[in-house]
Amino acid sequence: MTFHRTYRIALLFAIACAATALSARPDPAFSSEAQQMCTGDAMRLCGHEVPNVQRITACMVRNRAHVSPGCRAVMEREHAARRRATATAE
Image 1 (tube, one colour):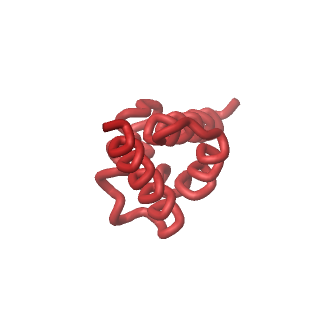
Image 2 (image 1 turned 90 degrees about the horizontal axis):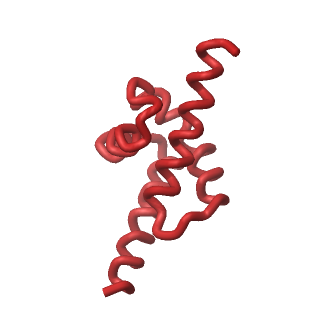
C-alpha cells in the first residue's frame, strides 16, 4: 500500500469519526454524506492534522468559512442538530 493511499484511508476514517463525534446522534448515513461533501476540504485545509480526529474536527470548524458550500451545509446542519438536542435535554 502506498503512502498516499494509506494517508487517504486515514483521512476518510478521521472524517467519519469526526462526523460521528459531532453528530447529536450517530448516524452512518451522515458519516457517508460528510465523507462525500467534506473529504476534499479536509485534505486541502486540514490534511496536516491526520490522523488526529480531534485536531481535524477543530481545524474544520476553524476553517468553516473556507469549506465548500456542500460541506458547510453538512456542518451547519449538524451544529443545528446539536443545539436542538442540547435544548431538548435541558
